[in-house]
Image: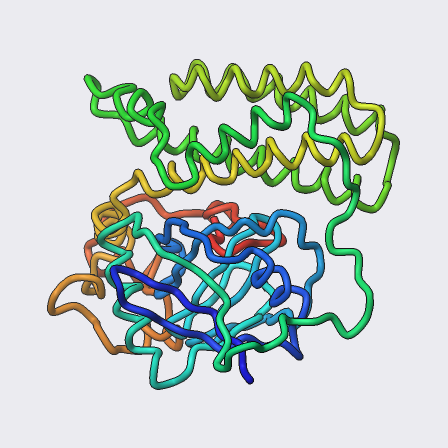
Length: 362
């Protein structure tokens, strides 16, 4: 019998068929995760994409990686342990492992959910792998694989970080209130958000690189722990002073100190993974803090004033731009003809993105 990924939102069930032959590793890990609740939100760089974090922490296999996505693709991005559901034709920010497929007749329900997430986030969702038949065997590997590398006893610092991670799994961190209040009297709150979100993403991605090195036993434990500790101490005051996130700063300082006790690749992996997962979840909450529909409308008016906003009633709904087949709008010389103001942007000065991206693509 077939296995399916089930998403339940407000009592409504949505399904995608697991691709157990094409991507067995991801399917196994999602099934092993059991039933879990998480927060779903819009992938705000890419139209029609939803994402959510998962408990799958140590999946390193990448099978059935797709350079391009189609509506209905469900992809796992192991950089951030997140799942992305693509409901429209669009350009993704980086290839991921496609492990499930939404049936064509079910796609409209996913599209409606994606539209809701654009205006209303976060949305609590319950996720589980289910079977079409009772008593079906769990997903099985075609050959032995090392799914959970580098096991190590959990130190006190790792347990503390995991507790902090669990505390913000479904609940918005209280410290975001202080970030929002920063610069409130000057009307320049956006800059605070940009730095806080950007630093969380940058540090999480860098730690992911170090995790990969530990997984492959590249370099020495001494060098890895020294680099990780220095990075955490570099970013700690930025969160404290720029974003007023004193608690985040303290966690990074304590983790940096804990690297002094690390003596093996396994211990390094466990501590670094705990820090990285916390930062990923923090970045998701920071992402959800921004009113993306309003911000995107503002930027659209500034960059493409001659084009209607496709996200507004009466906009360009259904035109090629909405399904990824059209151009991205006129710029530069054409913009001057339209009377639109704003500085020309030099080539290469846009959004930095990632060379090897994840679902959020930011």
